[in-house]
Image (tube, rainbow, N blue to C red; front, side, top):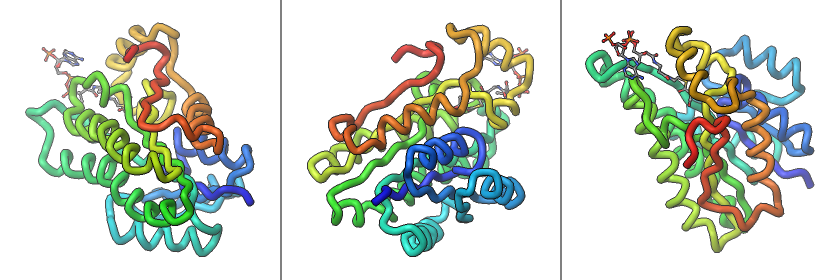
Length: 240
Ligand code: CAA
């Protein structure tokens, strides 16, 4: 039986590449998204992967969303917590709302989704959780105290939950992408982005598929000895 995977934020950017990578590798995939119906519809038409709408920042919505996926595809074996937003701004300009939104979605979303699948994974003695962190959670970034705190939190969350899952067949790992060619990175002012790219030893932005490659490794049945780790995929920008 093919394993069932949920990818949050799975219809666009890095999430889309992960959803498609998993489907091509034979997994049954549910791609979650929060808002952009048009892009989600186009994604499903293009890939044949069903898209499920709910907000990962909403605890009850995650419970209901996971229940829908279970009813359609079966028990969930794999969760990729990829959904994330930015509300960049220096401390002087950042609002409390911009802090809360990023923490609730990027970090709260990991908690909400893990809570919704954890008991089932324990019952079946198998699970793979992959949390998408960030180079900016490892190194910090000017204008991103909210995003860096949330992503750094994801790295701590990963190491803590990995300890709880280790003896139960559940692995919990993180990937820390660098700057990847997505809409999110395209929103960085061009003059700022140019300076960032100049500091990437590989000399270019990453591709979403290069993150999906790491996810496929971590979710495999034979990756059971890899847990609590952070895989940096950043073109050498931060060696950590
Ligand atoms: N280090 C030191 N100083 C910096 C700086 C840096 N990295 N970046 C900007 N500054 C300085 C500027 O030189 C400027 O100084 P002066 O006023 O003395 O000239 C001052 O800070 C204000 O800079 P801006 O004019 O850029 O200010 P702003 O308010 O218009 O924008 C900002 C600030 C929103 C942080 C903008 O610089 C920005 O978007 N930076 C990029 C942030 C970033 O990397 N986001 C990543 C998004 S993608 C992502 O998050 C995915 C992932 O996981 C990697």
